[in-house]
Image (cartoon, rainbow, N blue to C red):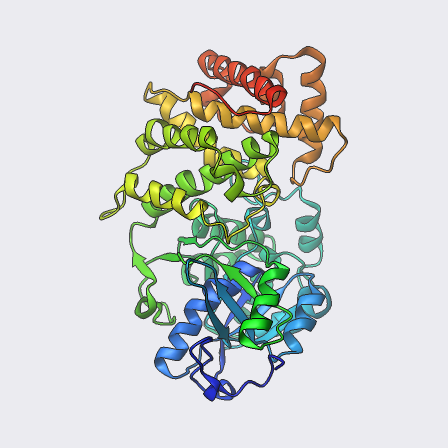
Length: 484
């Protein structure tokens, strides 16, 4: 059976269908960044709420920036798709929360019309860290070509920042109450940074618009978590064979999922707390725990695992030497830098994360995690190093992660492989300079990523240099064995 126009009474023990009438659902959310994570996470929470409440006005218009193929796939099946939760026992659910799919590349004016509509109460985003168009100081990078183009033609934007400002400007001019903005990417202080970038961009349009956004639009910080790798053909086949559904756009994720949103009064929003979303005034603690433990371990696994020859998180974590290294990294160098949220035991949390990595059904590619290191390493690795330096604590294992990242860049440079990183040009230039004089400090300074507290710290430079030599020996032997 093709997944389209599915009657919701088709519920079986094998798959859950929407229990509400989709024709009665109105769009109240526009989501920018139609990837697998949104469809398995924010859309899934909204789906659960629609099922619980029997419908409502929180249908989603999902917006991709360029992916016409995904739009065609979803449109061919009435925007329905299957979510497969892969665990000891797999489970399946058909999601109907997305009512419309648009592509900015071809339909920017339609996207803006939907965002500017009075019925749109929330605009959410999963555009990855680089989609926020920030520089190393965490503010809008006005030197980016995409931002330059959007500032030159603000009524025809191509970036998330440009779209937000253009839509808010339409509402401002027409005296329409603004939507509120929920950032859902792995970026510390994501709501605040997004607000700052939007206001900075808006100030080029008009001072009054910037002031209105600052005063009227809420940008709560959030933390999101659920490992969602690229959907495999095996999952598509499983859905076909087990459920009898032909689905050209399913998603797959692990069982664990979490969404923490900063409590902001007077926001008109779905009652997501009824389906497990945590609303709190202390998002930062949850955020730090997740970014430094889960995301930090992901980066460590990616750069170390790839250099040893592994392809997936599952393969790398089952290397007993790597796993032992990660446990020491967590206990000795990461947890001491984190203020635990109330009710969260960081030791138990970290061990649960390692157990999640050991799920053989989740084939999360290390090459995918290794992308955009210039954005991830400062937050996930250099920030805890900085905390440990200031507190006079050890950071030897964290130095190994930085060294593995440098070797990863060097491998790409020497072998002329593409480096998927917004600073690829600068990093390759730094690597070229480093290889001429073999001074690790040269690379670190040329990368432009070091905070002031580390730039001239001899102990930090020595640790990275020693770790770089250790990783070189690991690459030669093909076995990860470092006494850290």
